[in-house]
Image 1 (cartoon, one colour):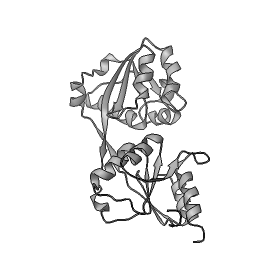
Image 2: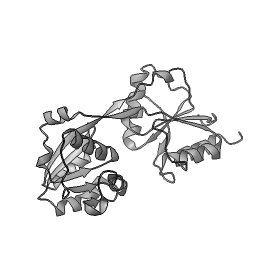
Image 3: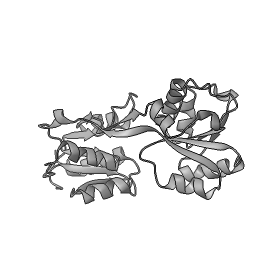
Length: 252
C-alpha cells in the first residue's frame, strides 16, 4: 500500500467545533480532503427505564463522572425525575475536561468537586478519602472493564446505572462513496462499518485506528490496519495520519 497516495480521509467522529483543530491544520498542510461522519452516536435512556434499574437519585451522596456524556445525561435524568440535585452533592470527575464541562450545570466554586488526572484509576485515592459516601456511576451500556474493577477494590458503596447507550449510526448514504483512509476510534465504530456494509471490502482503503481495542476489533473483522495511534512519536490520530500521508505522498 505504500505507493498509493492519500487524497481523502473520513474521520468517524463529529466535525470539530473549534477552528484550530489539528484536523483542519492537517488538511491545509498536506492538501488532503478531510470529512467527518460519526459512525456511532449516543442516545439517552429515559427516566422510566432508569427507574426500572431500581435507581432512586435520593439514595446517593456522590456522583462519579467519567465523560461529558455522563455529565449531560445525569442532569437530564435528574430533570426528568424532577430531582433537585443537593448543593452538598460530591462530584468525582475523571479528568479536568470533565470537571470543566460540569460548569455548564453547577456553580463550580460552590460545589464539592474532585478531579482525577486522566485515567480512571487516578480517581481512586480521591474516592477512597470519602469511602462512606453512597456513589452513583451514571454510565453507558459499554463500560470500560477497569472502572468496576477499580471501584470494587476500594470496598465502597457504589451503584452503576445505564443512563445512555452507544448506538450505531445509519450510514446508508455513504454506500457509493470512496475514501483513501477511514479513521476509527472505538471497536463499536468498526462494528458500525460492517453493520451498515456487511459486504465491505477493504481493497486499497487504508484503515487508521486509535487504541489497542479498536485495533483488535479491526483485525478480528478481517481488516488490515495501516495506521496506528498512539504509537512511538505519534500519540495522536492526527500525528499518525500526518506521518503516514507525508511518507506515501512524497513526490506528489
